[in-house]
Amino acid sequence: MSERPPPPPDPAPEEPPAFASAASRDRFEALVAEADAVSVDGWDFSWLDGRATEQRPSWEYARAMADRLGRARAALDLQTGGGEVLASAPKLPPVTVATEAWPPNVARATALLHPLGAAVVADEDEPPLPFADAAFDLVVSRHPVTTWWEEIARVLTPGGTYFSQQVGPASVFELVEYFLGPQPAEIRRARHPDDARAAATAAGLDVVNLRFEELRTEFYDIGAVVYFLRKVIWMVPGFTVEQYRPRLAALHRRIEEEGPFLAHTTRFLIEARKPG
Image 1 (cartoon, helix red, strand yellow):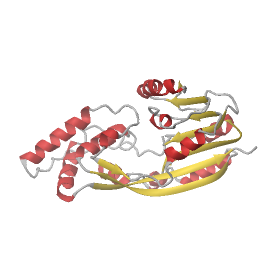
Image 2: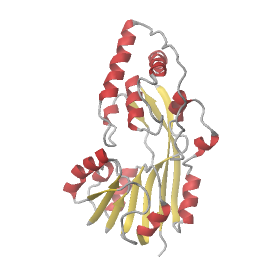
Image 3: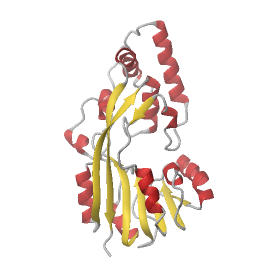
Image 4: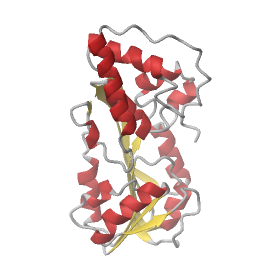
């Protein structure tokens, strides 16, 4: 997809830095091995508890989404991941459908959402959506990879609403650029909320709410970095521990000597309504 950083060139050989001590080297190897082996299925980041923190947007997306779901008749959750966010709502509409493209997440979402009365549809995240016109009065999506605005407008009923929290421009790019180097201006600007507003408007939707926030993200150990990059695969495309071992070792020493690695997450909330 166009907003992802381009694949990195083959890195030049470099020697890993000397560790501060044998104990530091052993900690590095243990942390990296653990994070490289753990499952990254689903969209649950609880493995990072105590190892990384991410400041949350002030609008409390899950709570606001649940409020809208409680008043909807038919709802669609696009790119549901493992279904964790949708499942957190205390009440689902009589008709609730979720889509997901990645097979392990399809299975995970099905197991989680079917007992709650929600159907899960395997969908490749390419238009058209496999639903009839005006099928849903609410469409939601948390952190979609792509947003097909014309398809969203098509499946919404007149008066229906699209409600989404999305990743904004240059999110966690301190980490991206640590591994890939400085990114071009057009890559840093991708996923800008102004572009989302323009695309929604072009699809015939009225944007009734658009908010943007920049938030602190801190990584407390190198294992957290490895896990994050394995799970959020578009940050450093093709990331593997072996390919980036020297950079990981240098970052491990930096964290041990200077404290947590600080990055900044960007998020925006968009709510758009179909006239009628």
